[in-house]
Every structure is written in structure tokens, then in C-alpha cells.
Length: 119
Image 1 (tube, rainbow, N blue to C red):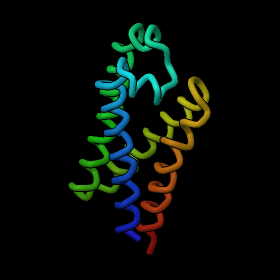
Image 2 (cartoon, helix red, strand yellow):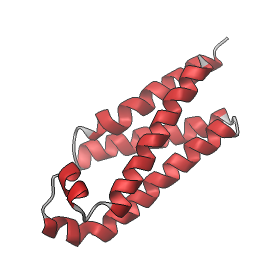
Image 3 (cartoon, helix red, strand yellow):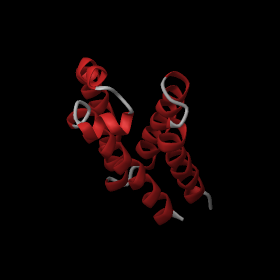
Image 4 (spheres, one colour):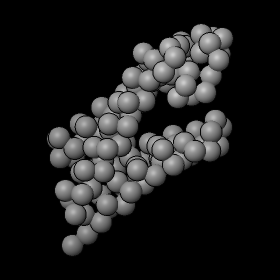
């Protein structure tokens, strides 16, 4: 069970590294505009804000990786909860599907992490 929890946590971290790359480096680029369904004007006007968001997603990924590789379950749990809260907030304020793309993998990872500690 611990291996499965770690696997899902790493998936969440990879998702957030991917979001970092999209928001920091490809926001104002045809790829970013396609992924986020934006016009050139919207992507140009919001690129600095998106880069800031991307940095925060990178911090979430870094925290998850730190927790996994340092074998610090409490750190993993904290950052998974942060991802879930961010997913809920994003779903409510930006796009409902964010809870699926960001929140669901983190919920699964958190549940498996919780289960892996049960004896």
C-alpha cells in the first residue's frame, strides 16, 4: 500500500511540475493558449500572473517530492491537502474541471497515504 501511495503522490508532483512548465514557460505561446483556451491578447495580458501561479505549483511539487524522498509522511499529507484545497478553490473560482485534473489525484494519494499508515 505504501508503494501505491508513493506512486500516486509522485503522479501529483509530476502534474504540478507540468503545470509549472505550462504556466511559467508556455502561457503566452500557442501551446499554452490551446491548453487554457485563451486568445493571444488574454495570454499576453496575464502572462506575469500565470508565471506566479506556476511558481506556486512548483512549490507544491517540491514539497511533495521532499516528503516522498525524505520519507516524511506528515510533509506529504500537508502538501497533498494543499493541492486539494487549491483544486477546490480553482474549481470554484476558475474552472470546475480543475477538481478532476488537480484535486482527484491528490485525494486518491491522500487516501492511500492514510491507508498505508493503518495497521
